Length: 226
Image (cartoon, rainbow, N blue to C red):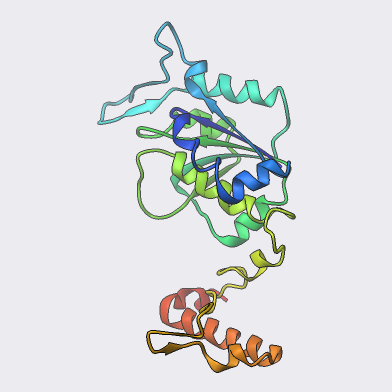
């Protein structure tokens, strides 16, 4: 999979992609993430990428021309399955959406800044708008990193145990059950006997029961959506 990201602050994305699972995915040749500095397409000697809002109001807006030039430059190299804009008013990122995006070959992500991007870019280029939650951050770089991580870990061969992602929270609209490791007793708290039994059918039944109980207690809305 290939993912391009357009950013006004590309340095914010150096660390998230340089370690752990995403680095492993890159080293294996399974995920190629490239971050492009929007200022390379900025206007004039100062490489301007933002300007005041028409109609007044606080906050700057990312200009249409630099974004259009950046997008079209990248489109000249490849066809994108989706051009994604990270925005608080987009579709909320959920596991089924991450699953769908992980099936694509090429994605382009726009990381917004300031008060957002010129609406005409959204109208002409953007095919999918995604939010990572009902709150506002200083820019779209962290949401872009969250999206890439959610997608990248699903790619076949990225995780050491390829079945691991299938049992994550939300894959079946349930939260994951509790997990334990050694020692079998820690400060008076013991691992449930069923997990020590070696009886895999009983273990799976226990895990499903725990998932249902945890979901009812913590995220009953997931059960109501069924």
